[in-house]
Image (cartoon, rainbow, N blue to C red; front, side, top):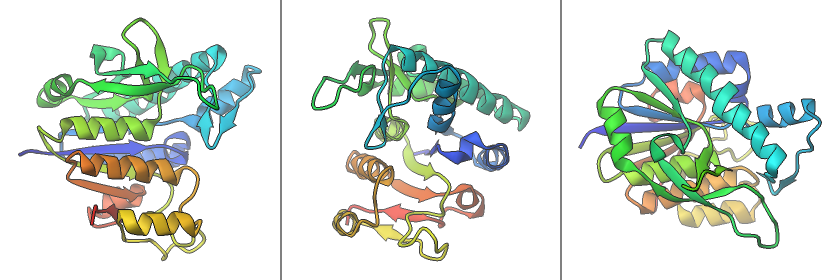
Length: 259
């Protein structure tokens, strides 16, 4: 079975010129086939502020009304995505910028109203593994923005960690998939102020202990939730690291294991 690496990158890594430059270089040096899934929340928040649109968040998740949907579509599907694609092309990568609507690769449904109305937020229903495989076997490098669609003409804002996990899970039957969550830190840290405190291995049991101890909080929780979900669906390996971890070798960072 052929190896496939899916890198999900977000935070400052894709939004600050120097870190983005390093990401593009290190990702380009990785062997194909590969997929890059990106976020861009800080850029969306900044653009919304420039347009006079209020950003509303609940537990780290963005409320997406009609105005905010226009912003995230412009920023994720346009500015951030195409800057990454152009940068990869400069490194000789046959990058193809996409949302879930392109080629109908990722379809979702609008999240139902509960205690919180998240607005135009999508929960993934299907990933077209055959479409991804066709792109990968033609030497394309898909660059996926965190937007999906419902098949009825409606774009939906969708969590990039969830998208990466869903893509990895869908392709696990065709490829031996390694999913890498790449962000600012070396991995999951016991103490974010101590660079040497990377937790090398997390299991479901130790994950619960880390949450109880408030060591794993906020945006790290959906990363780990999505990572363990992907492992349960046949993904070969989950790793959490930074751009140095991409360049320095596959043993760097925090690994997730089911046991």
